[in-house]
Amino acid sequence: MADFNLRKAEPKDVTDILRLIKELAKFEEMEEQVVLTEKELLEDGFGEHPFYHCLVAEVPADRRSRDGHTVVGFAMYYFTYDPWIGKLLYLEDFYVMPEYQGYGMGSHIFKRLSETAVKTRCSSMHFIVAEWNSKSIEFYKRRGAADLSLEEGWRLFEIDKQSLLKMAK
Amino acid sequence: MFLMLVGLLFRSKGQFSRFLGGLSWYYLKMDFTIRAATPEDCIDIFRMTRELSEYEKLSDQVKISLEDLKRNGFCQNPFYRCLIAEVPEEHKTKDGHVNVGYALFCYTYCTIKGKCVYLGDLYVMPEFRGKGIGKALMSSVAKVAKEQQCTNLQLSVLDWNTPSMDFYIAKGAQDLTKSEGWHSLRFHGAALDKLAEEAPKN
Image 1 (cartoon, one colour):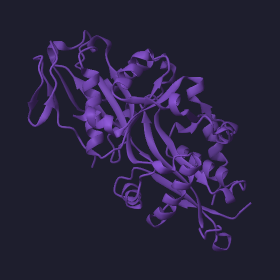
Image 2 (cartoon, chains in turn green, cyan):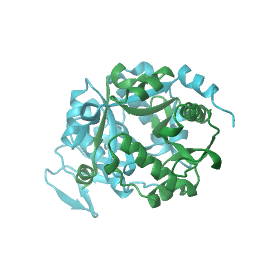
Image 3 (cartoon, chains in turn orange, green):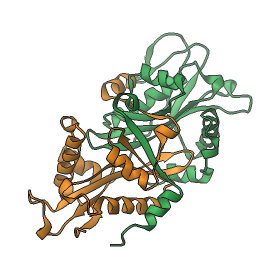
Image 4 (cartoon, rainbow over the protein chains, first blue to last red):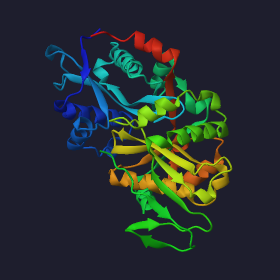
């Protein structure tokens, strides 16, 4: 297994976080949709009221990536609320660079997130997965995840900015 | 500090007009106010969340206590925000309630676009539907999202709940489960505890 350290992200990590966000978006064929900037990541994650929390996976310098990076994985999460069951930990993004996959890094990140959820007295950990991403779905289901869309019929809806502004008038 | 809404007064006159620099909505026969919830409202939020769970046939899933609701919504970094729809005394329910609807939401984050809002619950008591209260609650959440520079609003709807789906689609919502194949997954209870126990201790 590759040596690595899982730690809380710091302001200096925003460059790596954005790089990894774009790599994941490319894998999900959504790269051109990423409009977030390093400045926004910094303000939104490290201000007085953070909108998100982030873990990063870091390898020692002698195991850096082909492109010279030592931050090789991340998980971004935040807390939401269900008035029926209380606090939830919502996993927004979770990614390990391909050359570091298969060493248990993803599994460790995931378990650390679960530990965080339990320690902060969250009832559940929630996230979304694209139905074509069978590798990820298997990863989660092997670890006990339930597919609420299949099992209970929940559908995710989104109202985009244009429609939101129209409603706000 | 996140936004606390100024109360918007909606009065019945059957025509659109402006009031104190904000929009007023006019509907026949029913006054109502949309305002930010206070800790004292938690008892009504608690009551109405249970009514909604019964409608969605999931009342066995309701586990939270009134004390949890109060603590989680009114601490230094609240886990949720809530707007209340209130009617005047003369329109109160047969049980004496004037708080007849609510919208409960959270700030979330999208790595594609940034700050977002997730609408957890939107509910109006059955006897007060059809009077524009749901629409007004939705618009008020949209105003808050706009003021916080959020880029979109997300929510979840059960696939059999056609009236709700139609309501949101009419406002421009897209069903991402249908159009893009997104599924909601969850780790809960024993599955979550088991994962947490296996966490590395570095």
